Image (tube, rainbow, N blue to C red; front, side, top):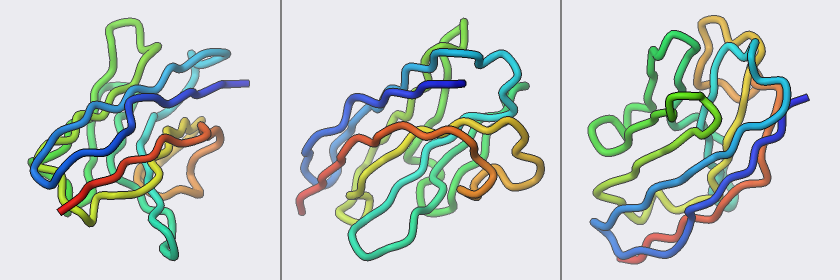
Length: 124
């Protein structure tokens, strides 16, 4: 069992920055990937960024160059640095962990464990 707890959400103006964190605990040694997803009201959950066991990263096209996913050295905390935030980035952001992500690092159905989410609001 893996437990994920997000933090760091909040309200910012357009162009601002936020850094999300996700504390990873439990039996996390055999995880294939960790990822960030988001869901805005009335929209489907979408993959934002993912990082594999070897450090390979993947990003949704709309956040490339603005968001950075990373982990601390002991891989117990996952981060998402979000810069140049836009109103369409506003959503509930989730941290997720996958036992086997394969070739679908940004697909939510590839992930097995989920956090409760942290809200990000961006005003124009």
